[in-house]
Length: 313
Ligand SMILES: Nc1ncnc2c1ncn2[C@@H]1O[C@H](COP(=O)(O)OP(=O)(O)OP(=O)(O)O)[C@@H](O)[C@H]1O
Ligand code: SF4
Ligand SMILES: [Mg+2]
Figure 1 (cartoon, protein in one colour):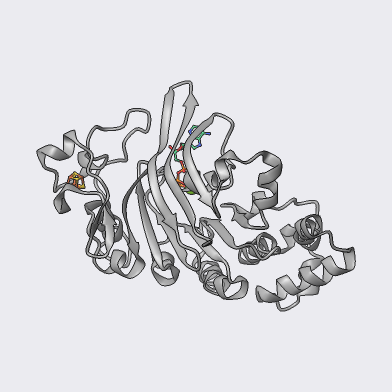
Figure 2 (tube, protein in one colour; figure 1 turned 45 degrees about the horizontal axis):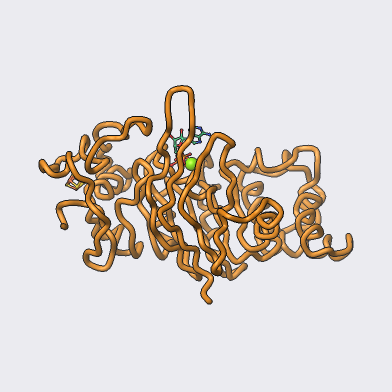
């Protein structure tokens, strides 16, 4: 049995006063174990919602259908108690904002060892030594001092590294990291990028990396998934996606980067309450044909990756 995570026809919506928000639409894909999979796409494309659905961390107004299979178990069918055995230990989530993830009134060390002691029923002494070792793994030069520090005493980059240490303390098989470089300045971003490059080596985990930072994705991901309006538009090896993107949306995302053409994508993503017919990208696409407005293309294998576009049908 493999350790892959299989998403089968996953659809996620949210009931709101304004109508039903169709955040993720019929996603069929596999996260391959042993790889770093990057999820990219503009804001609101459904990256966090799809990521959080794997551990059922979605808000109460959500409705999710389909299945998320890990080792022949459908994670969507587990009870909360069963899921708690998976969260942190088998699949760990590194949330978007380290400041919100840490309790400001507790030391870093106490927070790092809490999950370890709970799951593995370890003594306090074993927990402390494991926690300090974890901080050492993440390049803290004075791990003992960091262990006894409060979150506010660390810099942004250190807090992000400490969050990685806390989230991987149980050596999870899967790590789901949401925007680990968001809001960080260039130097700290570099520091955190390095952490993620090392993360796979340190933990031997498979990683799902949600990011707007395409350079980070290009540098460290094996596979990349491009999401738009909750739909997968392109998926394949990172080298192919970044060097020769096929989908017009992927091309636009890449050209918009500061170190590329710095050409912003024209138009805005559609309303998720009132999705366009046909290809969801058609209102913004310069390659659009009549069929694009009427019928949504299927994901098809093209040149060693999967693309959803009539240009390649
Ligand atoms: N609880 C909720 N109720 C209603 N809509 C929601 C809820 N949670 C998320 N959404 C909507 O789902 C859509 C997808 O959100 P998501 O957070 O996954 O986007 P994202 O791709 O992670 O964006 P970003 O890059 O800005 O983090 C958005 O339109 C968002 O407003
Ligand atoms: S299907 Fe048509 S509208 Fe959609 S991206 Fe391809 S060419 Fe553009
Ligand atoms: Mg997000």
